[in-house]
Length: 269
Image (cartoon, rainbow, N blue to C red; front, side, top):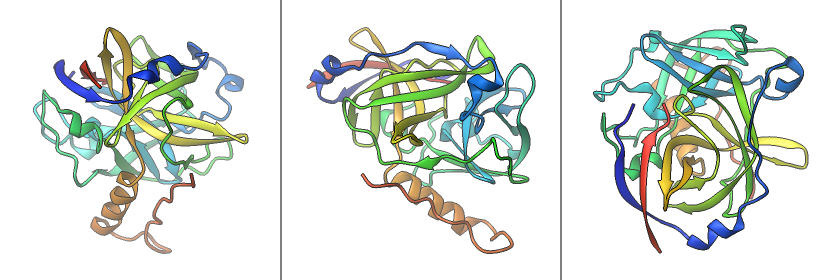
């Protein structure tokens, strides 16, 4: 677990007044409850714990970059990771080993402590040893970063709820600052890498990835990474350093159209 760090975030304070009618965390206990969320899974790390990740291609998952590092700042061996899509009560829709784990090229892990600039680049993609090609486990598309006041949702695993994913259907964007999205979404240790969603016209898309928990003026919030720009850069980097798969190179991900306060935050893993 990362050590608690004090720093300053700058964003529009009036955002606190525009929160939506939010919902609490609901455990997805049955297959019916989980319908549409099966592509969110637990990213297990042998001898360490877990993060949350989501399928964005048949062979690629998206998570937080800091999940790839140990507390001393060293990289965790790729073979220690495994992805369990839709894990619920010990059963997963699909389980895959990991063959490559690539953080954003500009992400700098500072070990046991961290700074706000890390959050803006805190994303990574991991390549599965085999594609997931199940009709009920469909990769998510990516949407533009949300705006202040937008309603969003999050699906995550977390401390005390490791055995099944939890859905917070409605939470809010409080503000944004240089690639950091400040949200009211309820996350905990293990929620790092959780996909943040928007649903528009019946379509669910990922708009951010959970990086950290925070407190701002005594209010619990979560911090996410904006995917505009950083995800395209990450995918370009991923394509440049690895061998092309049979049938062509890895297709890049395209994103759809569209006063000071004291803060303390800690990694959500």
